Length: 117
Length: 493
Image (cartoon, rainbow over all chains, first blue to last red):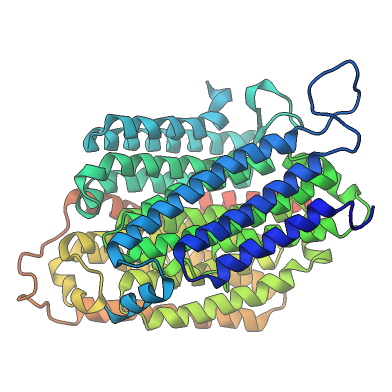
């Protein structure tokens, strides 16, 4: 159990922070959705990593193997991926509608327009 | 049939939703929505009676027993929240016919009801399930449909409000998934009852407090506790009236249900409130929410926005009750879940009537409306007085319990602050009273303004009368709430 053994989790933390930072710092609405995507993807990797057991194989019954990886996190994440896709699709379609209504996808310009009304 | 009620509660609106989308005809879709929401209310009532008589119901999905399969578990708290959600749903759907037809447009009506029913079934799913990951799935079903519903508002700011809600809501939901994942990695279980047994047995470690923190922040984002509330005022202010009435009275309530479920059932009272000191975190946040949001509400010119800020303050009252983690405090919190749902439902629906006639809910446009729309404004006043907590209204009962809870804990300044902030509610409701009853109506602006149609008035008054009924005879609500509170505390100890 050392830093290399936790490599996956280090990637999760880095990805999570990149995604979260884009989400907060970016003013472009499309980029925000991409940030959200990266943020969610890091959580997918977190789940997949915890299902892995060292020296175990894929969870398909086989007489040569006795240890299998835990398939449940994979199934959970399959659901979470679907949810993530739906969220991105809805978010992006909202951005399209916002672009039609405001003519811009920059947060500060939109706020400016709302304030001047 | 009766033994399958827990799953039917979710399935009926879930199946009715695609049906609405397929028929493509506004009125037929509306009829389907009304029928399924009333069936839901009936089922929730049956479940409530069963739970009150025989205790918690457990239902194994697909016949797989609990820790392996997904379990639906309905105890006194779930049954109580089911009633809140289905009651508001059953009142809002009949109301939606006129209101949505005007505000959303007939071409998108059928899709509106599909999204509405999806939202309803998602909220009901969160309440009935006993499985952590299932909570997340239903949370996303309800949230995604709520984003779509809010974006249907006529003002273009509805789009940006919905977008902001989507970003914040998804972050909250993802935080909840991270928390659930950490619990799973430590225990190997997703079943709430199972987790409640496994968690205290674990040796002391850092993962569980981190999971606790992720879940707390995620849920508090969803329930819009100060300072994670930024998405709420715009979302409520620019959504179509029927949507505001439904979401304001149910979505945040179900998020509070999640908070109670996670902290009391899964982690247990001892871990949440003694080791993690949740009470010390929630108490000041809820007090700031109550005080600052009431203050902001006073300065709003858009009445819908004013009520949105008032909702944030009311959420503060509920969390305040929970932060006492005593029987009385919890009872007050759970009771206010119900009372605030019917109060805000009636207020937002009354505003929907105003919107129907005036196309605006700006305070200056509502001048002298008391003479033109006496019944609508009457319902608004009943809700308003109830919000303040005038005796013989529902709001009074929950504030009474809340102050009792504060005094029991020896928190006199808090009790005093509750009374003081009630006076602030008097101020912002009075601003509406002054404008509506003590100013002249501007005839040149809108000369054919009359009372709202019966289809809008009846549901509005139904909730307004409930506010009065549960203010005078509160045995049903208080007994339900105190049973739920007692259950929560017993599981934890």
